[in-house]
Image (cartoon, rainbow, N blue to C red; front, side, top):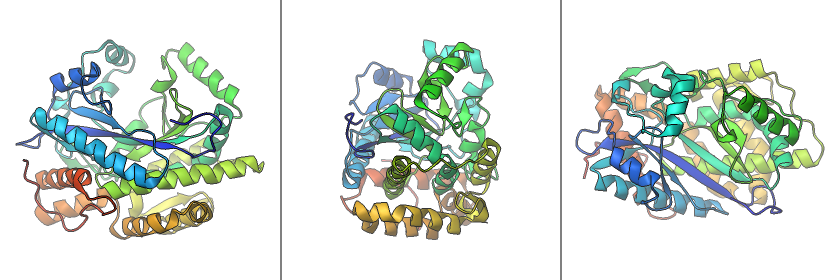
Length: 391
C-alpha cells in the first residue's frame, strides 16, 4: 500500500464488504458460483470472495488523496454492482441485512473456513456481518505499533460514527452496531492490547499461533492492527457505510488521526495509559448507543455527550487537516453526519416511517447504488428515504 520510507499517511486504501441480495426479493442471496469465480480471480482485480457466499469484498487501488479515495470507491462499487447483476443480485452496504436469518447463511466450501469452524464452532456460522476497513500507510512496524498504542482510545468513537447494524434477524437489537457487539465474542477480537514494541507484537502473534487461536496474523480480529500484507495500519472498527461521503469522511479522519499521532510519537509523547477494561467498556457503549447517547472521551477520561466527544476529536485533528488542505472537504461531511446521525439512526427512522424492514433494506440498497453513480465531487443523495426498485 505504500513504499517503505514514505511519510506516514502518504497513502491509503479502502476495503468494503457487501451483502449480495436477490435482485427481485432483496433477500440474502448465496451465490456460490460468483464466490468461486472471485476465488479463482476470474473477476476484476478489485473483487474478492468472502467467507459467506452471500458476501463480496472489494478493494481500491492505492490512493494518495481523498479525491482519489472517492473516485476509487465509486468505481469499485460500480464494478461490484455490474458483477452482481450478472448473477441477478444487488449489493447492500450495511453491516447487517436487517431481515436475514442465519438459516440463509452459506459458508463457502474452502479448507481455511472448515478449519475456522473446527476451531470456533457456531461463531463462524453466525457471522453474517460485513465491515469497512481502511489502510493507512506507515512505513515500518515499530512506528505502526507506536501509533496503534496512541490510537486505541479513539476506536470507540470511530465505531459510533459509522454504526450501521441496529437490526439483526428481523428485530431491533437495541444496539447501534450489533456487529461490534458480536465481534466481542471472538477471543482474538476487540481493541488491540498495548504493545511496548514491534518485537512484542511479533512475540504475541507467535504466542497466539502457538496456542492455535490463530494460524496467521491476518486472523487477528483486532479493531486496529498492523497489516500482515502491507506496510500499513488497518482500521477495522467501522461498520459498512452505505453512503459514499461517509466512507470518504471516515478514511480522511483515520488518516489524519494516524498523521497526528505519528507526530506525537516522534516528539516522544507517551501513549495514554488507558486500562483495557476501560477501552472494552467504551467500545460496548459505542456499540450500544452509537451517536445517540454518551461516549467515553479520550481527552476528558470520562463520559460526555457523543457530539461533544466528536467535536473534541475534530479539534485534535484540525491542525493536521488544515496543514494537508483537507479541512474544507471534510468539515461539511462531518457536520452533516453529526446532524443526521449514523446509518443506524437512518434505518430506525425508515422503519418508524414505513413500518417495514423491507423498506429499510430498499433504502440501504438505494444508497449503496447511489454511491456508484454519483458524479465526481457531488454527494450521493442523502435526503428522505425513497423506495429502491431493482433493475
